[in-house]
Length: 399
Image (cartoon, rainbow, N blue to C red; front, side, top):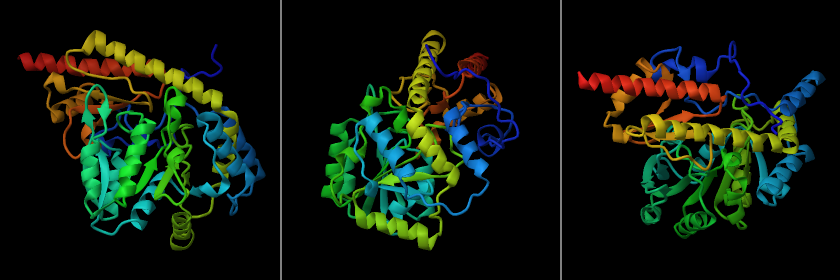
């Protein structure tokens, strides 16, 4: 018996949601059924909203200290209870956002023009961060087998190049949903250490690994002073993306001091968000059951998509259910429909916004990414729109 209702109809009306009201710059029009940007059409847990309301009742929101037991304690409790990882206070640092931390790790461990290694496909914001920091994108494509495999041979060759200074890792992987094993992560780490390549791991989707016991964080492989940093936060898990925050974990004290000095003195963004601190305590102390049931709901949505494709669209679409995230990475390669034609038709015919695969790559790749974090009713509607699009394209090709 479930305690939480993930089928509840929600509304973003009046909230200026990027998911709903921000489609025009990407898709050329508004009014599309949105399944693109990675936030959820699922309400934040009541325990968190109540904690933030209680903090609001105080009525004063001045500068706030994050170095306190109500920040450290919940973070340590969550990592221990969910992943059996022991953290200490000195390993954990509050930061303005995950991408801020990734950007600083890159900037502090490389120079303009240096190479930063990314697996391809990759989280599209990494590409933006590298461009903004005048770093070179160094592509290490994943190998497509039954699942996406890491190309260790090419990775090692790239790490040996002296101009490649940083590797930005996504764990679990966005957009494919790949969950990395401990053996794979250890091999990645060893290659980076041997070649003096800094390792930064974005683990923002860590709570969506199913089952949770399969998640292995780079934190587990860290040793004292390792050139490794892990960054994460509540934004994805608890649908709090509009409340910027994150925290990072490292055993490299000089690196931690450098980053803290940057956001305290260079940018003056070191003050914690008081509502976020309330949210962290409530989320990590009270919401484990909510996350477990949410993952069951997401698994059901993925099952529905897989079954729908098998029944109606197997000649045109390929889909392997991911072991993590709430993002379906769907291939239309076997349809023979060109990238540009498919993506335009999804907008014009299906009136649906799914993320074009080329956003996560350096070239066209015959894929789109679909957000499944919503009610089953919305997923059914989304698949019908995709079906309608492909049926129309098939009809037109016969004319």
